[in-house]
Image (cartoon, rainbow, N blue to C red; front, side):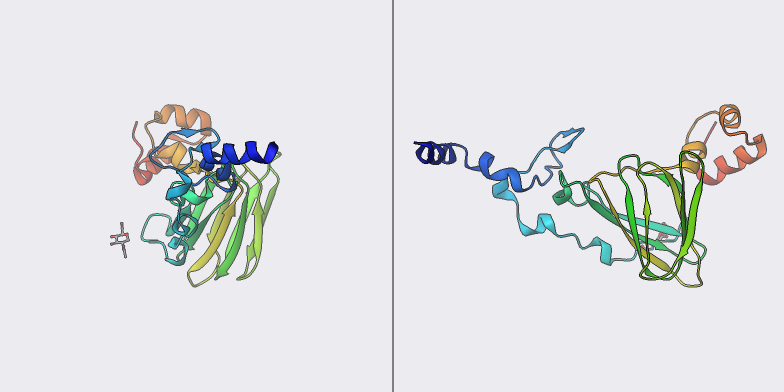
Length: 208
Ligand SMILES: *[C@@H]1O[C@H](CO)[C@@H](O)[C@H](O)[C@H]1NC(C)=O
């Protein structure tokens, strides 16, 4: 009886019963706190599980002399629901990924070229930082402030992986100086002086 019932159900609901292996994001569909809804399994192809962007150097002609190329769910729908994602980090000479957090993910960084000075700050404000050579790795626990700085005379490259398809990224300096939060308030909450705040707002595109 049971096998007959199962075959009957499979005939009725083939995709819903077979869709549990993955949930490739339907980027046109709604998002929920647990991710995107799934693309129809019949329209999923191997391309949904392949991402070529991490082989391409990012453009580091910018104020931080660095580029982050994400393979988050928005760029790589196959990671939806799998609890993972990745990114490529390019740091030109003098480049820096300023102090930032990923609210939703821990990070695992592998240096693939050059040298990177990297570190994080715990919630008890202890600091953990070191210089990593090619082939070395470092962990950045979820939600903690961290940074990466090119520590050599050549472009540095790292591949980072995350424990979420959508790690989120908030850069502290941009949160303080790249928006319209009034300068007087920024000064109050950061203990910085007016000249410093106005200077950084100008550099980073903030107003107010
Ligand atoms: C890199 O970015 C800069 C600044 O936005 C731009 O002028 C330049 O054309 C870009 N280079 C490439 C190779 O895309």
